[in-house]
Amino acid sequence: MRNNSTTGLSADEIREIICRIEDVIEVRLPSGRPPALGLFRQVDMLLVLLRQNLSQTTVADLFEVSQPTVFRTYRRLMPLLDQVLCLHQPAFTDVLANRDTLVDGTDIPTGNRTGAAENYSGKRRRQGLNVQVAAATDDTVLAVSDPVAGGRCPT
Image (tube, rainbow, N blue to C red; front, side):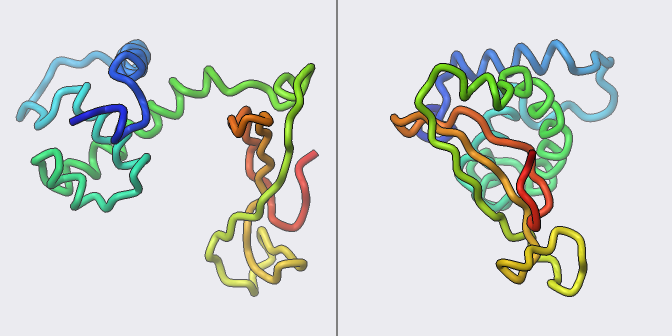
């Protein structure tokens, strides 16, 4: 598969992610059946799943594995991917320093019932989370804030 068109990353960038995952992953002696995919293909499959927003069954067909294999890979590698990529998340204030930036907030609906008080936005009359996004004037996303309750803005 062509990595750049399916994941948005070059093969070198995927190898960098894999090296970081190998640094934090527990090294255990293999027991039982060998994995259906190697680590490179597992990470590639996870990135395709996240980037293209395909169903797990479709991704399973693309990588010639079963849907449960896709699910297990997602469940095992997603926390590791979060952990190795958080190293590059800059502080929101550092992004804004000495640069022309556009900052905007968006309400992301959570789909919860509106009767519950948690994350309820009275303005929008629905449950949601508020996320602030900083972007450069050339449309490059610089930083994204942690989500907060939909009824208030982050401080």
